[in-house]
Image (cartoon, rainbow, N blue to C red):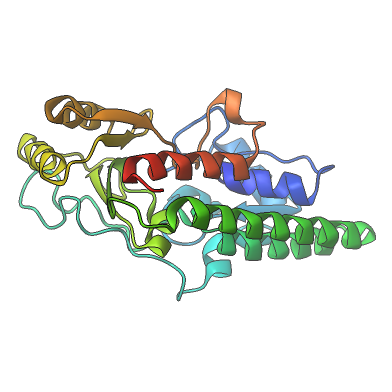
Length: 279
């Protein structure tokens, strides 16, 4: 069982013969995912369970994992406190309006955008499958090592895309889910919504974004298919900017399920490189 798409992809790479089930299959919203009784039983009885961690990102999943009888891989535990990022603070934080107080997350859950964290998680996943199926332990470990190397290659590619002298050091996004991708290269994100996509923006906040886009000369606003899209379309239209499509990759569309996660991360980085005007 895997709680989000990047972890399901990882499990399939490490254990290609395993029966991997994605909890938010079909592109369902990953935040606050509601677990069905059948899914809860599956979590409790699966040989291996991969989830984001006890960070209040998917409370029902986190509760169910507490009763899991198999091997458990927590991405947050793999990352460790020193590599976990707090939610970005520049999107309507502390404002005295209807949205104030909604952004309660203390950890940015989108850590799969950090290839080094994912590489370490690949090795941990290999050990989890090895413990669950000792007869094939060496195969799982070898697959995990191959995946680790592939993710190291992704890290190098990201440096090539975002590590140069870009014109801008900030990107306007519909949903602040990209800190693990951007912060290593000194890039900030300013979002229509914060880490919690339920916290939208007021008309005044949208007007502030329009002024920022015009003042900084931003040519693009990066938007997800759903989260914050209405606001992103509004500020792009008012500021005369173009929209670029991005995805937080916790959930993917049906046509992307069989895609390669590394390629999808590369695509997001390419969109940011365009928006930032990187060489």
